Length: 170
Image (cartoon, rainbow, N blue to C red; front, side, top):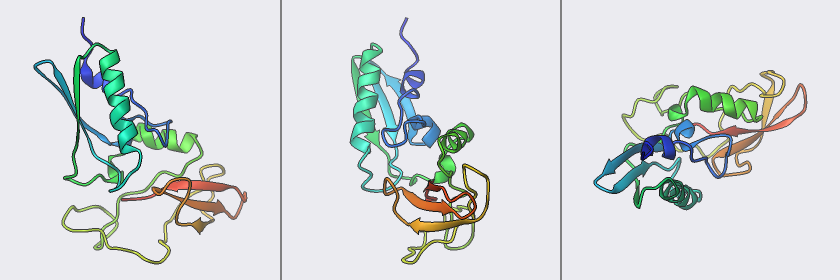
């Protein structure tokens, strides 16, 4: 019996944050079987994301290993990915791994994403109300707007003094 292609694809992990599946991250948008071809659609977390080629390859390998002879991976740019698409399970996995999960995506008109226009470009440090994923303190400070990957910022808790990555809101 042929497995459900969505179930197979949803097991693929993010190469930069392996505690998350592509589904947890909200990157896997659609998986369909059309004739003998599985068509999987993914949306990058930001333009130029270097992990997209690996995500594509991992999807192709996982689906072909599961018995699907033809796999096509489509990159979907509209609508743009939002950190709001990270699932509750994904947010919990980030926290359990010591990463700070993003809050609601911001727009230039308020704290919640409205999809009515572009997100304002910010050249200075972004002020975020974060809690330390290790001790729960709200006393945190930005160390660098760029952490281990471009989609993370590096923070430090001023109570427990531990550094931690924060997945940026987009």
